[in-house]
Picture 1 (cartoon, rainbow, N blue to C red):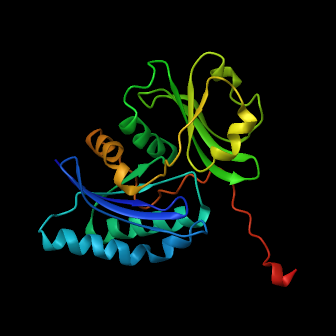
Picture 2: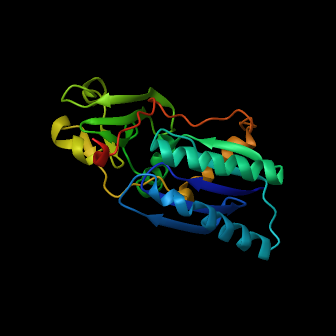
Length: 232
């Protein structure tokens, strides 16, 4: 099959994993209070993962990286590191959409969801804004990824016809606002490198790899630099 290095830096949790033949054989994660800050330790985490595989004489076939949306700084660092490794070791690059990645632990933990259930992963943006998409249980997009300012009607089109499961670090702040009987909230769902294996392996098998030279993260929104408070 294949051995893949997985890198995830889209939120305040930075994680690295290694999968071989559809099994996760190594995983490490680090958490901080600030989005993108954990990515500062990404280099040493990757070195540790590579030392692990080298000590077991396991050659890599590809690097998979969570490609957004999410933290601008985190995504930029994660993708840059992934591209550097691909260049240095002549490996294939796989981009894994962050919102699809969020769906993986939900599908694994809750295999008995209703047949017509929809999944709505959410990443916190600011105030009542989230990065969100709507998927069916086969991870087919029902609605594309957008930056949503959430109110009571934002997802009514789907809530009136389906049970919809909301999760991710943007979902908790939205649940009271959504307030629909078909809206369900799942706690504790994070985009982690250890969940990337099925999505990355499927893309590799289907030849859905990226051009290492030109690949960029999916930021969704342009980065806006802010002036430090001490300079105001």
